Structures are given as structure tokens and as C-alpha cells.
Image (cartoon, helix red, strand yellow):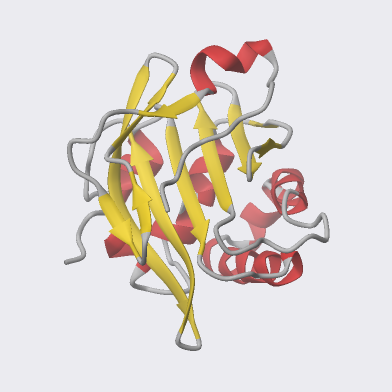
Length: 198
């Protein structure tokens, strides 16, 4: 299956920087039948596929993930601290998962990546982020979740084309990235998304 972004109407302040469409491929990542384009376009900003990874649990494939950045790098500090351009974590579900279970896995990873002080500091942002997955409906097999950083604005989550409200702030998205390239619950996620695997 090919991942494409399908965004509904969004406030005009974000349109110039956030609307993304698949660009012609030069090199691509395929994970368990999920195709990640080598590049996407975000407004006038092109993003490239930095790496891909497979999330498994108890021997079952749960989701495939791709990380898009402005310039490929294997240095997580560059991605999380220095590069403040557009970014995207794209998740393609490989099996149906309830919203509660998906949220629980995120909360578990948050526990392993944020200090008590950071959890208090970003409490509002974390609640807003988790709310995107707490609507009660399951994430179906082939569901696509996009977690985007819009420079100087904040974090936007879309689930199967439904765009949630902007979570303001420049720091939260880069703290959130730790869930995949900081101290992820599944260690293999980090080298995969950093382009170090294989």
C-alpha cells in the first residue's frame, strides 16, 4: 500500500507550510508492504526520508514508521536540537489497535523519555497529543497517522486525513521525537529511523 497524505481544510495560517503531497521518487523505503516515498513536499520545503522502522509486539507487526527531515542525518541531536525545519513522523498501522492500547504504548514511552519535571512542563501539550488518539475508535489496519512539525507554530497530528488542532510551541515536537529516536520502547526503532539499520 502506498502512503499518501489526505488533508482536509486547515486554517490558512498553516496552509503555506503544512500541506504535503508525495513527490517523485528517487529512492524509497518499503516496510512490510508499506511504501514510504523518498521525498515529500511541505509548502516550499522539501522533506526527505531519513529512515524507516518496524514496531512489533509479542511477535506481531504493529506499525511501520518513517521519519522525514529537511536533510538526512544519522545524528539524533541534529534532528532533535539543531534542525528546526519541517519534520514528519509517519505511522502506517499493520494491524488494528484500539485507541486505548495505542495511547497506553505512547504513555509507556513517555515515561521512559521524559523526566518528572519535563512531564509537568509539557503536561498541557502531552494531554492534547494523547487526546488525538482517545476518541474511542480503533486505529484500523492501513490507518495512517502523521505527526508533523510546522516551524514557529507547533505540532499537528492527522489520523486518516482528520487533522487535529495545532499544539503550539517549538519545543514539544522535538521532545516527542524521543519516543522514536531517543529511548524508544523498542530499541530497533531508533537505528532504523536514523538510517543506521541494514
